[in-house]
Each structure stands twice: as C-alpha cells, then as structure tokens.
Image (cartoon, rainbow, N blue to C red; front, top):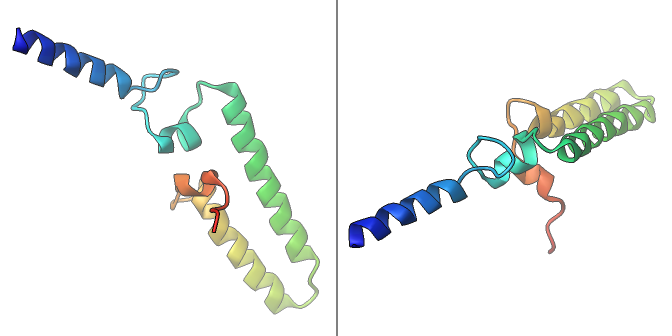
Length: 99
C-alpha cells in the first residue's frame, strides 16, 4: 500500500513541476523569460524590451558630450543584457523591490 501511495505522489509531483502551457519545466525563470505558449506574455516581453531600447536611445541622444553618450550607451547595453543578452536573469522581470 505504501509503495502505491509513494508512486502516486511522485507522479503528482512530476506533473506539478511541468509548465501548464508547454512541455518545459515550470519555474519563475521559465514563465517570465522563456515560455512562448502564452501570446500575451510574449507580447509583453517584446514591448518591454523595445521600450527599454527606445529609452536608451533617447537618453543617449539628449546629451551632446561624447563621453556621456558612450557611458550611457554602455550602461544601457549592460542593463539590456539582463533581458536579452548572455546574462539573462528572471529577476529583472520582477519589477522594483519595495524598500
């Protein structure tokens, strides 16, 4: 009897660990950065990244001094790398932290 209950619990746990919308493993990182099964999430990520790109370009354009432009561009690229670069992090999608 105990073995039957244990295998049932394992099956339930395995099902719960899967994304309900696609075959990937479920996690906060997957939902916020990778899952493409929900068109609304895909669109939100696309619009947010484009907004950040546009913001970087407009802030850089506001300055006339080349050193400022270069520094701001590097800062923007660094921040953007957490969304689309090699340092992707689900933490950036969480919004500001309450302090």
